[in-house]
Structures are given as structure tokens and as C-alpha cells.
Image 1: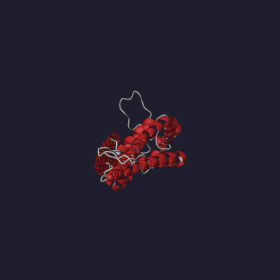
Image 2: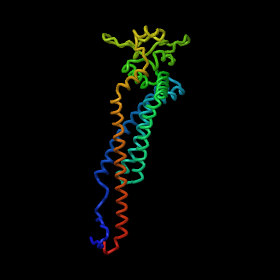
Image 3: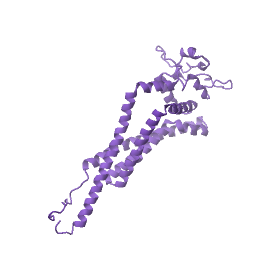
Image 4: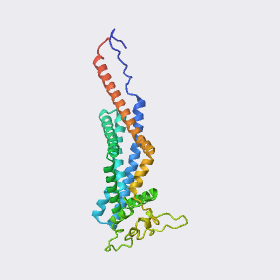
Length: 291
């Protein structure tokens, strides 16, 4: 191809600034998380539908709607939908070399990353308020313990894992209508706590689900002989303080894919812009015999 002496070089028609490595690396990166998002959405929808069929028979509509705030299925669904939308923009944008979709993907991913950083920083700075929010969340979960099977299993797992009972203390279970200590409560579980609060018995072959019967009427020392009398909030705070390196590693594990996605998308956007400029330049000078 001819070139005017002293003029800028003109690349051939087959040349492209867009790197196939960057393009398909970003595509498969988003495809992986797109598949994960579909799995999360499917699990969330299935769990919600199954529980909705049960809840119509067990609880009122008001209680069912109140459960949404502490429903793990809703959390899975929300995270899955957000991931699906983001990775859809990334997949199609990288495959079709669409600047608009790639910039949308990069911008949204940057916002999500900054929100996570801001939440972590604010949680550290305003630890007392964060503790209060966690206490409110646990109290709401206790209130709806019997209304949602997934929530019930989650609370039982947490109490057994952290060896605790209730939010601040084991007496927080009075917030639940089934475990309330009032004389008007006709439940057989009145003034009790869930079996997950009970101290384990190594020789016990069958779990005694009524092991916490009437424990809320005991004082701390008496209750400590039967159940984990300490609240889960203090146990959780102590666990966080003793596992800061683990939490830091988890935060880094979440941050690296997000930063990688932002970096790859910005590189690809710049390459696409350079390719567009090259095409326009070649079109403008194609009629010039010196080029």
C-alpha cells in the first residue's frame, strides 16, 4: 500500500486494534458469572414458590409479607437478578463490541464495588449503629422463626455454629409468639427456646427438640447448665475480631473479579474506539492515491 512521503502510516484492512484475547476473556468471564446468576435466580424462585405454597396454609398474608425482609430466597433472587443484568451487558457488549453495553457494565460494576467499599468503611466507623442494625435484623428473624423454614434452618445453624442463643440473650426468644412467656400464650413452647440453643449431649442418639422447655424462666446461671446462654451478637462480634484475616481474604476474593471486569471492559472500550477511528481515517483517505 502506497504512502505519501512523511505522511502517517495507514494500516491494512485486515488490521484490528481489538485484541481477541481481551474480547473473549471478558466474554467467558461474564459467561461464567451469567450461568451462576441463573442458578441463583432459579434456586431463589423455586424456594420462594415452595414456601409460598406452604405459607398459604400456615400463616396470614401480613406475616408472609413481613417475612420477605429476612427471607434468604429473596436475597438469592435479588443477587441473581443483579448479576444476570450486569453479566448480560458484559457478554453481549464484548461479543458484539458494543461500547454502550460495555460502558454500562463497567459503570454498574464500579458502582457496586464502591457501594461495597462504602458499606465496609461505614460499618467500621459506625460500628455501634451497625451493631444496632444487626440486632434489629436478628430480632425480626426471631419474630418470624416459625413462619419460614429456610429462615428457621439458618437461625438454628447460626446458634449451633456460634454456640449462642437469641440476639442479646436467650430471653430474646420471648419476641416470638410461640416462645413468649406471657400467661396468655397457649403454646406448648411457652417460655422455651429452640433446640439449637441447647448444650449438646454426646451420648444422645435422637435430638430432643424440647430440651429448651421453660428455660427463659431460669436465671443466667441456671440456664447456662442447659443452653448456650450468651447472645449471638456478642459471639458474632468476637468471631469477626478473631477472623479478620479470613474476612479480608473473602473481601479480596470479591473485589478481584469486580476490578478485573472493570479493567478488561475499559481496555476493550478503548480498543474499540481506536478501531473506529482507524476505520474513519481509512475511509477518509481511501481515495487519496498516495495512501
